[in-house]
Length: 185
Image (cartoon, rainbow, N blue to C red; front, side):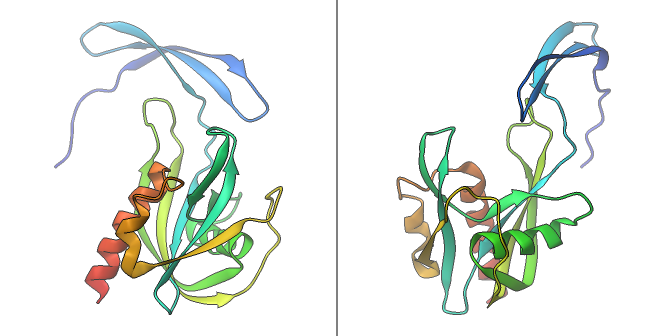
């Protein structure tokens, strides 16, 4: 079912803060009913990302544990990263697997494209399930070696109770991957 409503008119856009990584933009908007409001958002960069749920032939999920500055702790999640200029999401997904866990995937199935917080961010992330893994390592950009954690697929729901497994994108990907894998059987 298609949604049809006129988008608000952008009256003004201005960068109000900036760091090495982010630009915050203020938008003055006029809605179709005449109401005007100012919103703030991360200025769109046009770069999107991928996240992959790797599944081994032995029936294990491969996760990584890496430091997250936002939470100031090590988090458990699935391999992920930005799509480089000129790359497709599929190529980026295989590259990120090789960089972060030392495996490529013969089969990558896109699960869904998600947006973390559409009120503030425009960047999209394509979630994949990766199967038929083969060993191949590429140099990544991580500041320290990532810990690879094998988790039995049969115990995937228990992963949801793990204190370190809290990232919304990884949780969403796990649910979608489980649904996909159940249909594949």
